Amino acid sequence: MLQLVDICYSTKDKQILNNVNLTFKDEITVITGANGAGKSTLAKIIMGILKPTSGKILYNGQDITDFSITERAKMGIAFAFQQPVKFKGLRVMDMLRLASKDKKVALNSYLAQVGLCAKDYLMRELSGELSGGELKRIEIASVLARNCNVTIFDEPEAGIDLWSFSNLVDTFKHFEDQTKGALILISHQEKMIELADTIIVMAGGNVEKVGSRTEILPTLSIKSCNGCGGKR
Amino acid sequence: MNNEELLNIVTDSAKFDGAYNIRINGKLFDRKVNDNVNIVSKPNNSGIDIYIKDNTTSQTIGIPVILTSGDITEKVLNDFHIGKDCDVTIIAGCGIDNCSSCTSQHDGIHTFYVGENSKVKYIERHYGHGEGSGQRVMNPETVLHLQKNSKMEMITTQIEGVDSTVRKTTADLMDGANLVVTEKVLTSNSQTATSIFDVDLNGKNSKAKLTSRVVAKDNSHQDFYSNVKGNNDCYAHVECDAIIVGNAKVGSTPKIVANHPDASLVHEATIGKIAGEQLLKLLSLGLDEKEAEGVIIDGFLK
Ligand SMILES: Nc1ncnc2c1ncn2[C@@H]1O[C@H](COP(=O)(O)OP(=O)(O)OP(=O)(O)O)[C@@H](O)[C@H]1O
Ligand SMILES: [Mg+2]
Image 1 (spheres, each protein chain N blue to C red):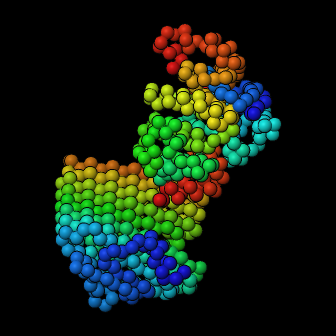
Image 2: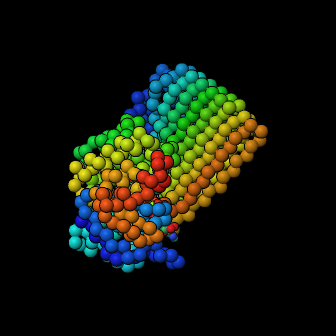
Image 3: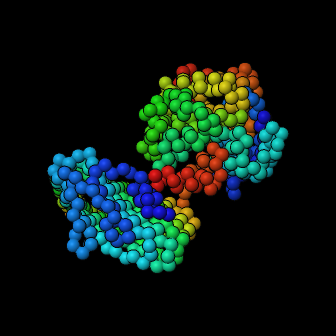
């Protein structure tokens, strides 16, 4: 269980998160909200990439606010970047091997889960030679390979084609059966939001709403815009 | 480190199924020739001529050099005369294990005459080792003459231990010739490395791709100079990527000159520290900073 207590984050001239209090249980939580609401910032604070200006992070009761990224990763927190990072010289295989704790699991299976054929991709370099969607899917695969207790995906659907998208939704649906941890999805997509046990809506650095899917989903304006996807 | 170990590092343990010529401490140590490849010493121990007959294919030819005692300074000229329609791999390289306090220096000039339609893969590795205070110096010079429609791929690697190196590569390309050079260099401590490329694209549809990936650590210093002239309807791409660790310095001085309206020449250079994002990604996989840095650098130079 992961708990955020009174988390604030500000840069020199801007307050980005205001007193965020949240609890993530071992279920699927979807965080949604307008661009700039502070979703990615929150995810980075959980991973330790950003240090909160004030407040506390508790992981299974332990205060990890001052823990480094590496320490958190080793404790079982994983984060898939909104924007995948490129590496010259590092192959897909190298990245997956670094990510995978269980050395026996075939790397192929992680690529299959994001709809990529291992034989076409394992040897490719994680550089600009891969398309944006391919890089994004490999980023997701690298985090699936980590098999962690708390896993955050920052807009996993971004840049992914429709066919792969529905596969991805299935992957997340089954994720729970396999890992039994907390799965946190940051998403604007209705299909993703529908996976949620709990939905968090953020706005302007604040938690606007938290509740179960049945409570929150009807209040989101997604469905009101018939077919055109008002939030897409 | 014994001769065999050093030899294996320099040749990356490649097996020479073709002809070879091994030079140890300034002297011929072993040589093998065959029907297609002849190797002949030049007068006064000044180098060798390698003759490769037309239509020679699938042979790996080795010409490694190692120095294991200090105070040797040698200059060697190796000329490769490669016939038409060949397809061969040539592995060269120099290893210096200098435990003494004197300088060991190997300067090699390798000249390639690559015949029409021939394909050559040339791999050159440089390695220095030894606790002694004596300098390990290597100054390789490569001269490439590429005939019509020939193709040369040159891969050079200098990993660790060479105190000072000036590498010079000169090439001229005829119609349809294709040159691909990939250079990897790692310097540390107060080592210096300079790489100079001079390429003349004289032929129609000739192509050159030069890639330099280097890592400079500690107080080391690297300089990259390229001078590529497009004298015909041709294409060239020059790329210099450098990672700086610590207080190292790297300079990149590109020059591309189009002397023909249909010449298309591109140059790209990136110099900087390891990208913060790359470190963050690897840290988030559970690596510590040292490990992450190692993974990024090893990958970059692989
Ligand atoms: N380093 C920074 N300096 C200044 N402002 C920043 C910085 N990082 C983020 N912000 C601002 O903080 C706000 C929240 O950014 P964040 O990336 O968390 O939004 P988000 O909810 O993930 O948005 P999106 O849906 O577009 O991904 C934005 O207004 C952004 O401009
Ligand atoms: Mg975001």
